[in-house]
Length: 320
Image (cartoon, rainbow, N blue to C red; front, side):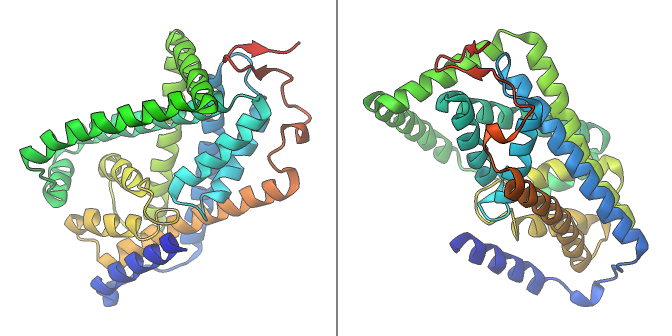
């Protein structure tokens, strides 16, 4: 409730700062077609994400249909929980129950999320090359400057925090076991270059679908945002929306788009409407995930095509 209130408050603040008289977006057939296309692209992105997840899990992973189902269910729950972190938690719990490996489930989700962030960074770097002016404008607008002493102070604080977490893990048998399972999964993944390349390649496809979804929405609403600029903007917006501040990034995403699109001459009201159209597509996909959850749930036994292989507690495949 707190994050929902905060998200609404942030959105209200962004809207209050925008000149609503500059709103020129019109919802005609083109806009509805753009919304439908964005939904399709997001569905493809979720399916591809399930493929990436299976590559991370490696031998003994559940069936792709089951992982795809969990991704859609997680997307549904992320509508009500803080950003994608909430959906990741749901996927972690469901997979841990299916594989009897809590650490393996958590480790796979964390590793998969890191691959997604890496793909975002790759697109952001590509955008800096093909659209240097947009990149410079982004850096100038964000204007993040940390005093040198804050960096020095953060280093020992981080070290102490990590030591504290390590001590807590070692003092709790279940946590220690989960940590061992996660490390085993990561070591197995690291020893397989084919899986690493494949998973990262799929991550690029996933993020490419999201960029195309934003681009399609912009074109359908009559906003002229070149693809080269989207390569800079979308990764930055996605990273900002991942912050567990509001539900599904509400308010954060809109504020960032207002900031990014202003140099292109796009009115703040149009930038907000553009961002909310993506939120609508996000909600539609979430509703699809809710239907999947209502019909199939998160039980692996509900999927007839689920693999009989599971991950054992040491991260090694077991089963017939």
